[in-house]
Image (cartoon, rainbow, N blue to C red):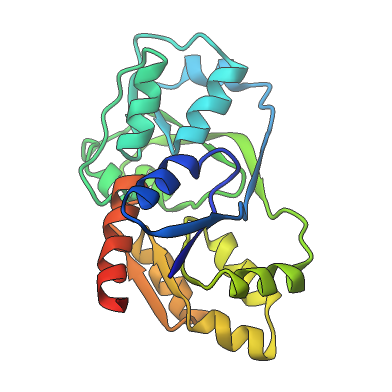
Length: 242
C-alpha cells in the first residue's frame, strides 16, 4: 500500500513523515501549483471592510505578502484551524468554526443580520460562491480579494500513471476538485479502470459527491483537509486493506 500525496510543493513533508512513523509508504506528486495574483486594491478593500474572512492558509500568506499591515479594528475569520493558526503566526487573531470546516460552518459564526456590513473574502481565483451568497442573504455587502491562482502542472501523463502503478499507489489524498478532474481527464481504458479502483480521501462532502459523480468508486470523507484528519482516515483505510 502506497499513499499518493498531491498537495502543492512544500506542503507534503509533514504528512509524509507521520506516515513513515507508522510504517506506511507514501510518494509525493504535487498535482496543483499555486501562483500569486496581485490585487492592487487589496489595501483599500481591507480598510473599507468591517469583517474579513480568509479562506485558506495560502490566502493568508499571499495576502500578507502583498499587504503587510492589516487594521486592528476589524473582525477576522478563518475557514478552519489551519487558517486560524496561520493568521495567528502574523499576529492576527481570528474566529473559526468547529469542524467540519465548511462555508456552512463559517456562516454560523455571523449574526443573523449583517445589514450595511461590508465583508471582504480573501481567496483564490475562482473560489466557490456559496459563502458570499450566504453572507449576502444575511444582508452583507460582499467583496473579494483573489490573491492566488491554482493550476495543474505539466506532466507526461502516461509516464506518470505507469510510475504510480509501479509504486503500488492505492490511496490518493485529494484536496481540490482539480485533482479529481486531472485523474478523470488523464487516464483512459485500462488506466481509467485502475484509477477507479483507487481509494480517494477527500476533506468535504462537496468533493465526496463530486468524486462519485465522476465515476470514482471508493471515496472516503476525512473530517478536514489538515494533516491530522487525513492521517486518521489513512489509518482507517490501512487497517481495512491489511
